[in-house]
Length: 169
Figure 1 (cartoon, rainbow, N blue to C red):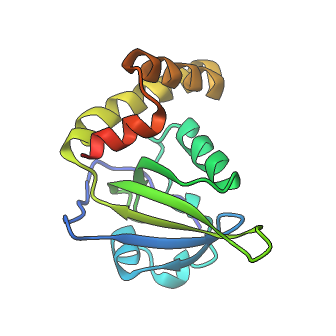
Figure 2 (figure 1 turned 60 degrees about the vertical axis):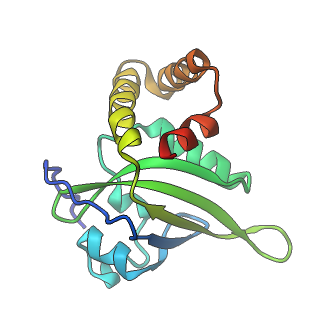
């Protein structure tokens, strides 16, 4: 499947919209609710068994996804702001909560994510930080991006979780 070309058309979630999806342990989509399917612009059969990265927007720093996958692999919950790309190249922002679902033996069965509309406060802050992280990645790779993220957090005197959650309040 050809990856769409990004454009400047933004789709907005409503206050009461919730996007829900599940992926298998490798990140392939195994479920998406109607809101997820509709906003993505893909048909359900195009999404199922596709890697969740089908929605990855090039404005997203890789370090955010590394944090996400590291947390999930450690069976830890994570919150993050994500800019996703639709089939037609338009985009939408979400405030995502992702968790691992465990088998009775404690191994990871799949991943579950619930996403909603990010706050205005978050959208005033996150795109600028992500642009800086992307610039750092282009010149120094993910290590440079992680150093910059840690500098931002240290300057604010808070953890990643505290920062992300504070923007949604």
